[in-house]
Structure formats: C-alpha cells, structure tokens
Image (tube, rainbow, N blue to C red; front, side):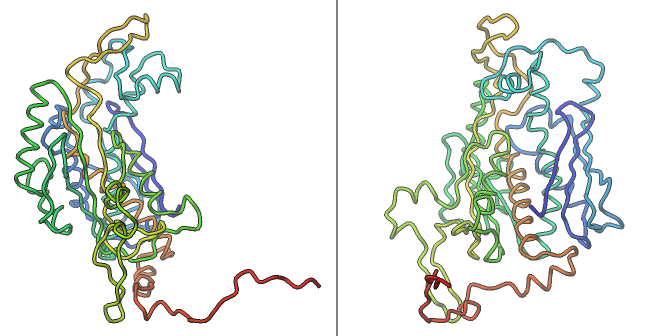
Length: 394
C-alpha cells in the first residue's frame, strides 16, 4: 500500500487523531475545504444530540508547512468538546450489551469488565477523523481532475426516483436538502419516514451511492487478490460502522440477468473505445475501465434505539432490556461524507501506486502520459502467439 492512515481516540475522550502517510510533497492544503467536509458530516436530518454539542475542527500538527504538504506524515487532531462533560465523572456500570453493537463482541474479544471501552472505540464518532483524512485525499485527486460525490438513494422503504437525474448531477443536488437526496420528492418522503421513526423511538438505515468521475483506466490490478480495486474498495467501505453491503454498479440486478444483458458492449468511435452503458460500475477485472466509478452501500439501522431491546445483564445473567445511549435516529445522510472519504482514500492510493513519485510536480507529467482506452494506445500485433512453448531438453 502506498498510502496509509491510522486513527486514535475514543468517543468521549479528549480528542480524535489521524495520521496520513504517503501523500506527495507540493499538495496545497485548503483548511477551509477540510473544515467544510467536517461540517457536512455533522449535518443531516435524523442526527442526534451529540451534533449540537460538537463543532469539529481539524488542527494540522505536522506534514504541512506554509499551506503545502512536505511529503512527511500528516497528523490531524480533532478535539471532543463533549469530553468536558465526562472528565472525572463517575459513570454507572454498563453491563447490558445492545444487539447489533460491538458491546458483547468487544467484551468477548478483549475481556472487558465493563462494556464502555468497546462503545467508546467502536463508536462512529471515530469517522470524524476519517473525514478529515479523506478531505486531503480528495484534494490530491482534484489535482488530476478526479471528483468524488455521494448521495442518499433510499431510507427505510422509501426509494428516490433517480432515473431522470444524470449521475454526474446527483451529488450536487443532494447538498440542497438535509437528507442528501437528489430527488426533491424522495427527500420529502425520507424526511417523513425519519420523523415517524423518531415518534416510534426507532431508527432507520438506507442506501448511499458514491460516484467518482475522471478516473483513468488502469488503476488497480487483477494479478493478486489484494490488489483488485473492487476488493480494496469493499474492505475500506465495509470498515465504516453500520455499512453492511457494497455493490459495484447494479450488481444484484446484474445477477438476475443473462450474460448478454449484464455487460457493457464495446464500440469504436473513431480511435476511442466507448460504452453505451455502465453496468460494470467502472471496474472490470479489478481495474478501472475509464467509466465513472459507481458504488451502492447498504447501511443498517443504528443499533442504539430509544425503544428498549431484549438483552442480558452480563453482571448477573438475568434477561433485561437495553438502556439508551445517545445516538442518531438515522445516520444515513451524515454517513455520505464518510463514504466519500474512504472511497477517496482507496482511489488516491491506487493513483499513487500507478504514478509513483514523491512530489506532485513529478506525478502530473506522468498522469498525462497514462495509456488511454483507444486504438492508438492499444497496439495489438495481430500475429499468432505460442504461449508456454515446450522446452527442448539440452
């Protein structure tokens, strides 16, 4: 891996930190753009009370001088304003695990005597650090005119009608409402569904879609399982709390079609090789094919509900009900920038892998010479080839 990051911090601890290593020297860092991404993560219909307390700002501790990356690891710090309410406070025992959370599995794995350490680290609060990291990866990709955007296409049983909205316009339209849905009617229905869930003391999940434009063909590889770009994207996106499914293009719809209808025919348009559809979602054989990358992500309803759920008090073994811990009613709109951030990280890593180099000035000329999806760049010999010829014994 060319690019890597680590986060640290607890939900109610002093701060979150993230270290991003591998970005080249010479990348301008717009701190206002970074803060804008953090603000996007904090806003969305269905969010809980925590977002009224926090006002996330990322402080750059290293790797950037005079507003430009140096090539050294970049360290960012985001203070938890809610920490002041928890510091030196005696907290009651937390021994009843919530179904669907990491409470029980964390206790089994690490042998905790209380469930709170699992809650603190497994919390989606950690994704604020990822969004800050992803903002830097987005800035790197923009230097090559690669754009990433996301939107909500479903919440609960409400599906948006996106059939008449071009893919490249959806993320922009999504930012015009607080459920991040590009379809105005769908957005209103989603808001109503979230309000009903609130009244019922329940939670809702949904579907997030991510699209990337301007990607060159040839990122990723099929030569090893862990170099396939679809595998790398899947791993990164499934690491986000509550994301339980990743679909590349209309994958599940494709699974129900015959092969002649599930793929994108290749046509010649002058020297260029073009497609009339994008059912592959921009990836073939684990490699980008020059079309927009299109991902669909399934996010489950958040595990913490106001309505108690059946569980067991691990301190005495008795069956009981869960106790509410503050959380969102619907985290889906707020998760869009998190999903964008993890997509940006994987794509930035793949581009760095393809281009090589330690500075932006080295990389840009190489990007301009990348092989295109065209007859002129694909020089076929047209001659028969004997693969693995028999060796003559000496």
